[in-house]
Length: 253
Image 1 (cartoon, one colour):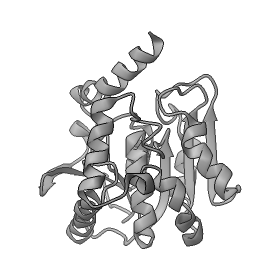
Image 2 (cartoon, rainbow, N blue to C red):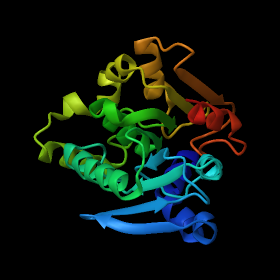
Image 3 (cartoon, rainbow, N blue to C red):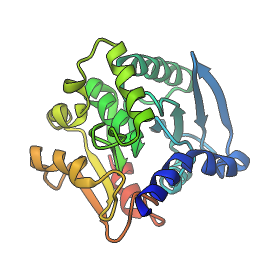
């Protein structure tokens, strides 16, 4: 019963959070537009932007403490909705169009921080693997790294959709369901700093089946890599209520 409740909560999470609306709707200028079928948002800091930016590929406004702290420090927060695209080449092409559009329109830096929670982490890591020249840093929380772990065959509709989208691109599912784990070495070689948070009691996206396999496989060391384990925490809440450690890692040059 506990597992079923957690799955229902995950399915309802975005609608529940977005119904409340992110705090910046009243405080900050935000521009909403579309890239093809993708909903996009750019949130601009007050005063003079510092040219740096952080981008979410999923769940705009969910657990926003880090985004809000960076906005206060002159960062631009951006969003391109590829929540249900699972990192496919077609979605990456849309995201790259978004990247070029936002850089040109707002005069932002060549490299950006990519931020992914849960399934957004799969896209964030996959995009960074394929476009390391665009990435300044990576921040992920409870990231899905193997689509056989989540959504996995237990959640038949989401699982079938993920497979369908990848196979429509001509991919072999056996080669792509754990794409971030197989190819994370490209991120290591590019020297991209990574910070990951996770709940030690997460039963929806278990760390050991996901980013834990990356940490073990590539022998990640302190320096360009930070790991924050949250004792007793499940899949939610993401991030930290007091995100000083994350913000300090991301804003440092």
